[in-house]
Image: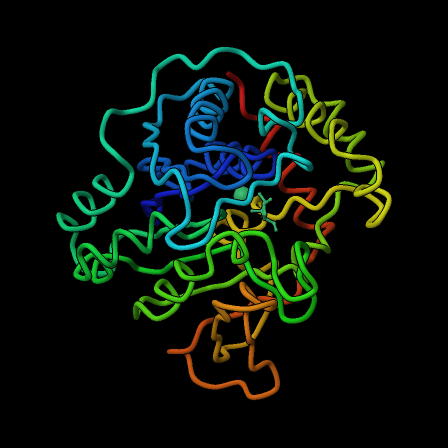
Length: 309
Ligand code: BDR
Ligand code: CA
């Protein structure tokens, strides 16, 4: 089967960086058309720079488009406390080999999706959903070209920024409301799933033992993760890499088609209201809840091992 054309919308962010590397390591499954970046873990200029560096680390030339510098309505909220001021947990990185494209990410999304046949491109979003919401509001017809939107964000229960909200949804709940209401098929990977995918000491040792620049950088970033946050879960959750893994190895995950709504205002802003106990038909978002974490890490480590820059 031909590789699936994918646009990856992200905010690197160390787990975004692993997501990019995994996508680039699986060309038989993923044809990475472009990377779009947004303000999230750090500012948008930095997320675009980081994406370019990660592409260079993998020895590839995938174009990077910088997008929205702030959320639609809320004041910006970053995660530099977790990802470091540079967004890459202080890892020592090469320079990007090509600069970000001049075209804004939202213009790129509109142009690329407008020209594409119906249901022909997958969007994988692992960041605040500002770019996607802006594209949909400016040009609702872009939805038609999207085969599926696979996104890391939200939670069935507890959030990780507030008791109610996960970071990507907390950072721009109004964008999330637009995106969840846009009418494209959605697959959502909430915290319940990604918190299963943690880099235990044994998994980190297996990554660090690989003899590639990409794997060495991933190990450095994992080691740069704040100790207190690592202690909470026995390792670092690779949230965003799970979303890319779903595109390549969907058999590792399972979930239910359920109604999802977004709280946009008040103390619970950014909460995903997931109607978990009333599964419905395939037109509802597929919310994934379980991952075979051993299978995921075995395949991720194998993929990182063959990524030679
Ligand atoms: C999400 O928030 C970001 O900090 C991570 O990159 C991930 O996309 C996890 O809540
Ligand atoms: Ca992210």
